[in-house]
Length: 188
Image 1: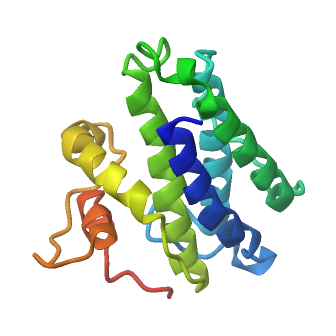
Image 2 (image 1 turned 90 degrees about the vertical axis):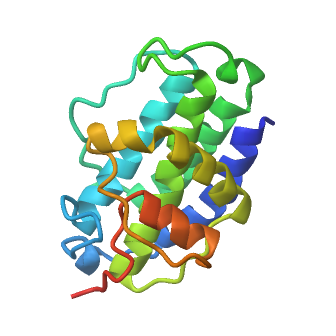
Image 3 (image 1 turned 90 degrees about the horizontal axis):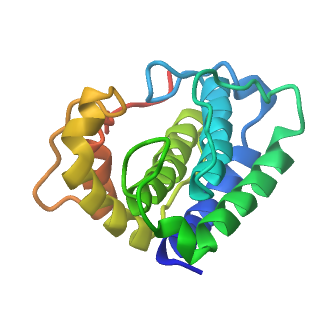
C-alpha cells in the first residue's frame, strides 16, 4: 500500500457509511455545496471515485458529464467502487510522474481524490443529519495540499473563498474553512 491508498482506506471507512445511510427521501435535500443537492453529490462522488481509478492507471477520465447512478444499487456500488479506487492507488507506480490527463504530479492527483472522499461525505453528513469524523491523518495531509493548491482550486471554482476560522480551530475545521465551506451551514 502507498500512503495515499492508506489515507483513502481511512477516508472510505468513514465515507461509505455516510453514503449508505442516505435515504431516498433525502436525495432532494440541500447541501453545503450550493450547486449540489444530496442526490447530485452522490452522483458527483461516483464520478470522482470512478474517474480517479482511471487517473491512477494513467487512463483517460471523463469529467464532461456526471453519471446518474441513483436508479441503481448505488449504496453497494459505492463501497465496491471505493475499494477499486484504493486498489488503484495502492500500486507505487500510480504515484510516479505527471498525470497525462490533468498535467499535475500523480501524488497531487491522488490527494485530489482523497480531498473529495473527505470533504463531500462531510457535506452529505451535514445535509442528512449523520455523524461524521474524518481521518485525522487524511486531514493533516489535505491541509498541506489545500495550502499549496488553494489559489488554483479557487480559480477552477473547486473551492469557494476561504472562510475564516478561529486561531485555535481543530485541523478539520481549518480544512473546511480553507476549502470555502460555510461552517455555520445547517439543514433547512
